[in-house]
Each structure stands twice: as structure tokens, then as C-alpha cells.
Length: 166
Image 1 (spheres, rainbow, N blue to C red):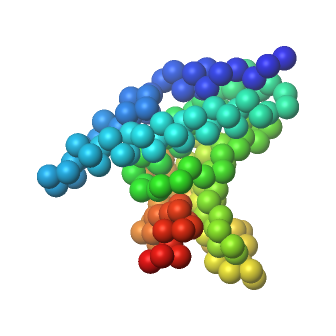
Image 2: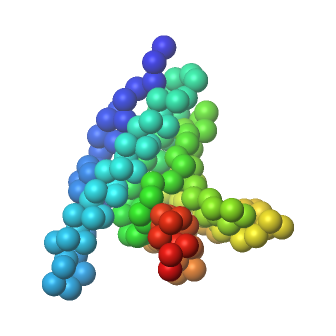
């Protein structure tokens, strides 16, 4: 049995997002349209990664798990629409429909998890002795990650060549 396409999980747009296009207001800068296009393109790449993750699943979701996965995708798109990132992270579904999004470089990382219940979890890993468990936090999907997590996502999602040149 094959995995349902991404459209099966994301037919209902998130409150502040139309599929693939952010509808929240642009910042009041002269380049607001360019910013909006960049956010839209990044979210489109993230949605493609979510679709590929759903295709990698070995077995199909039950109807309950499919609903959870659909809600998790909507929640992830909502939260990720407020975060600046360049490179698309590792995206995976658990066998029960939980969506995980992760950036890692060397011994550092950021992990976000969405289960479709309106709450998302996130944590940071800093250094070889660190683990995600020690910094885990939960928030409502109407909120976003804290500024430290946002900055770490931005740093980890930069092209490594650009980071080394800086």
C-alpha cells in the first residue's frame, strides 16, 4: 500500500497560511515583497520535504494517525512561517503521525516536534555533552519559539560555506 500524497495531509490551510503562501503582513520595509517571496519559497521547500518524509514511511497511517499527521503538517507550517531559515531541515514522520523537524551541524542542533494537538515541542542541543532532553519546551502553535531557538535555527540553517566565510 502506498503512502498518501502530501495533499492528503494539508488540504486545510493553517489559520495564517494559504498552502505554500504566507498571508501574514510583511514587515514595514521597502523590500517587504521580496521578504514575502523568500518566506513563501522557503515554506514551499519545507512542504516538499514534508511530502518526501510521508512517502518514506514504510506503512500507511491509520485514519486516526492520518488526521494527526494532517494537523501536525498544518501546525508545522504555521510555526515555521514565523522563523527565518535558509536550508530545509531533516523532516520525518513517526509511525503515529508526529512530525519532527531538525537542523544539526557538528554537535549542535534544534529539534521541533508537532503531534497535531495544538502544542509543539522544541529543544536545543549545544555541544557533544548536550542532549535535546535537557532543554525541551512546549508552546501553543499560535506562539513561536523563543529568540535563542530562533537564532540557533537561523545559524544552523545557513550554508556552511557562508558560515565559514563570515
